[in-house]
Length: 325
Image (tube, rainbow, N blue to C red):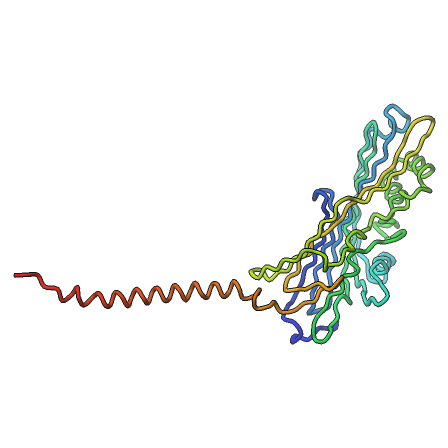
């Protein structure tokens, strides 16, 4: 692994955190730990999607699904040349990208299914961790982190081998079929009537709403912790809905996700569009707290010696005093 020269920058690690504006229980998050000394980035993405299938109470579908309650949790690891890792890398690439996914884990892929008399709810959580190289470059002796890929979206199926069978961990339709593997009749109904519609073909690994340039985010530098934070809240969510009239009754299928972001960088960083330029903190920022501490200490020392000096001047007058006879 190629390393950056120590003279270029004194930092050892940076952290990029992208959080959802939704409640944490349903949040999509992207966390990137950047290490300029090794040129590697650890990427942790937690993608959450809520899929809701609604149906009339008392219908045949309602009676079939109203007591459904199940969950599936799968885990697996992959090398950089596996199909899943290559799909992830492909979603990062751009015209001059040098990114390379070295390895990847999916731990876990979690489906939770709950049905009642009017709706079936599927909560899908996909936690992908990947080690990526090629994020950094040195321009005129300065380290620059290219973060254009943070708003990645995986288009199409992302097939990976998990616990002895192949699973598409991306598309809404595949999520439905995998979640309802034990309910073949319901899965077939949904496929027959919603399979050709846009909601069925929506990706769940989608951080495209995070494409706002970092230069437009709010920046804050904390010299006490040597951390630069960029924040940006994007209101709204991505929701895809399709409805169906069947035998005079209404059915609908929807998928919802809503990621947005906060960026925290260990060290002093300045945004340039979709990149972060890593430099030494300006003296006015980095030295303010330290200067304040020095001034307080000097004041305390001056006060102490001033007190000692006054005490010495008063002491002779007190010891030479004699009582009148």
